Structures are given as structure tokens and as C-alpha cells.
Image 1 (tube, rainbow, N blue to C red):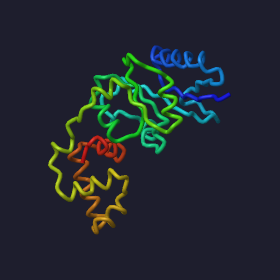
Image 2: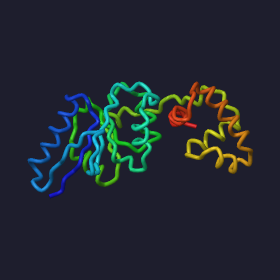
Image 3: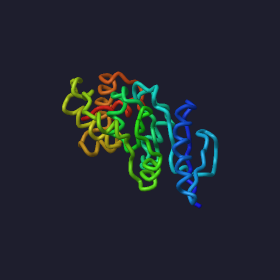
Image 4: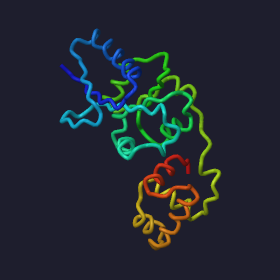
Length: 206
């Protein structure tokens, strides 16, 4: 029997109940299939096929905890499902554009757990039909900030995950010069540490 391991970081029992109801419906039609619910944060040797996090109260990606950011930037993004609602355009836009995680609208009228399970196992992202239908490009943060040409080039490389040493070599500049550009960028984006700088950069469509 195949057992699908689901790790839940959802505190809202109503949301969790809705997900498990749909999974239980799958059980009635698939006797050779089952699932196991793992508690997020508790040490376990079981590797989850999918981790579910509740982002419904998130108004900005800057509110992410470091552990959530680590999950979000993991190369296996299809293993992460975020619960959101349709009014979170400023959160949903960057999530769709810059990450590979799956998104489930908590107000989704047509919800089949099978679609999410299959997407995860096939290494594909799942996006709620209602979110897909309402998708539209969000205003870019970068469009409204007067970055210099040099700062824009540094931003482009930072968004690709390059560090200061690598950027200096790519742009044929000293590390001191790159650090100066980085400080100016942080000031313009109103962030004070590297973690929030990375989050902010991922929100900018540069």
C-alpha cells in the first residue's frame, strides 16, 4: 500500500478539516492508497511528500519566518502547498512569479485533493483554478524605485542567487564597490538585513 505523507503547519482546524475530508474521500475510491498526517515542527524520520502551510494572514512575504523561507526556496517547491485567499494579490503575485510552490485558495469551490496529490508526486505545482482565472500582473516594486544602472545589474545577479564575491567577478568590480551598491539598494528598499533584502528582491520584477 502506498502511503502519502502530509506534513501540516496549519493551525486553523477548519482548513485542516477541509483538506482531510477530501483526502478521506480519496480513500473510499482508492483502497490501495492511504495517507499519514505529520505534525509540522515535530522531529520525525518520515519524509513528507507534501508540507502544507497557512499563509492566509500574510499581507507581505516579508512576514515569513526563516524556516518558511527555507521551504519556499527549496528546489523541490512542488512539495510545499500554501493556503491563501483571493484577496492576497500582493502575496499571490510574487509567489506565482518567483517560486515553484503550490497554492490553494481556501475559498475554492472546486477542490479535489487528488489533483494536489498527483501534482506533488509528478513534481508539478498546483494552483487553484480560481487563482489561475483571476491572475494578473501586479505592479512592480522596482518600477517605482530609482535604481541606478549599476544597482539594477547587482539586483539582477542577486535575484539569481549570486553572492557579493561572484557579482564582483561577473561585473569586473571590486567587492567594496558591490557592497556599496548593496547598501544603497537596502536603503532604497527600506530593509536592514540580508534575509529581508532577499525577500524584497524576489518581490521585484526586475
